[in-house]
Structures are given as C-alpha cells and as structure tokens.
Image (cartoon, helix red, strand yellow):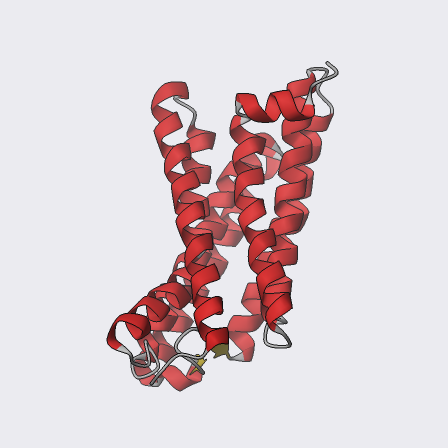
Length: 244
C-alpha cells in the first residue's frame, strides 16, 4: 500500500527522533570510557531502551517505504515485541540509577518492586502475544499501533514514574553550590518534563499533524537536554552560564 503524506511525515519524524536519541545514547556509552561512571553508562542504556516504541514505528515505516507495503501490519507481534519488551527493563535500570543517588536507604525495596513489576509485565506480555497479538493491541497503520488497556496503563504508569523520579533526581543537583551542577539539575528536570510531555502529545498526535510534529520536536529536545543534564558540553556552559 502507498503511504500517505501524513504517514510519511509521521514515520520520518519518528526516524529522526530515533537517530538523534541513539546517537546521544552512544555518546553516553563512549563517555563511560573517559569518566568510568556507572551512572553515565546506565543512563545511556536506559535511553536506548526507553525509546523502543519509536524503534517499532520507525522500523515498520522503513520496511513499508522500501517495499511499498504495510510494514508490521501483517506481523503485529514483531511490532509489539520491539515496542514494548525493552520498557520494563528500562524502568528497572532507572530504579538502580535513581536509588544510587536518592533514597539510598530504600534501594533494595525500590529495586525489588520494579524488578517484580517488570517480570510480571514481561510474562503477561509474552503469554498474550503468543496466544494472539490482538490481545496486546492492533497495528493500525504501517507506523502506528493501538495497545490494549493493560499495556496502555503500564505505559502511563511508566511516564508518571519517570516524571516524578526524574524531578526528584534533578532537584538533588539544585542544592549544590556549583552553578554547573545546578544547571545540570535544571536541564535534567526540563528533560524529564519534555519527554513526558512529548509522550503525552504523541498519544494525541492522531488529532492533527501539527500536534504530531510538535510532539516529536519536544521528544528530540528531551534527548539533547538529557545529554546536557549529564554531560554539560562546553557550548551549553557558554550558552547558559555566560554571566557566571
């Protein structure tokens, strides 16, 4: 089937977001060799896993574009496996990063909770997808899918979880006397808010192409903000700390 203009724009922005996010994730992983920081390495992994929904949509788009076809519409289990299974892993790894710096006294309980939730969700997911992918949802176009209520609720839970813990994570840096550390904290808070806002607008992107474009631009900005919040490159220092 021929892709519509809206589908091409949707798929293209999804692909651009994936390329930029993967590039920034690789920068995190490469910086680990320089700084030997577990935090930087783990967040690079988290970012790679957290954008899995867009891996599904962008790879389906590429397949549909090259072969003038339907992408994963005829193989929805592939779309769902790519799009969902990395998310519980990302949530658990984030619980490790978060509790290394915040609520350290409760790290074992916190991590056990998210490990348990993740395992339960993965088991339920694979049981349902093996029985019938329609129990997970429906791939409604070569780019987009509608998930069932269980998966949607988990995604919503994950978004709220990332927002709350991300703000708490960033606020710790705001207490520091060093202006560069405080800037990192502000950028991290902005990054988490941007990611959540972009994800919410992504859900509403079917309303209009303008909302879809705004959502993807906000998501792209969140990847750059995450990089600044952890690495703070010189150009960001010059841009935001000119008066210090």
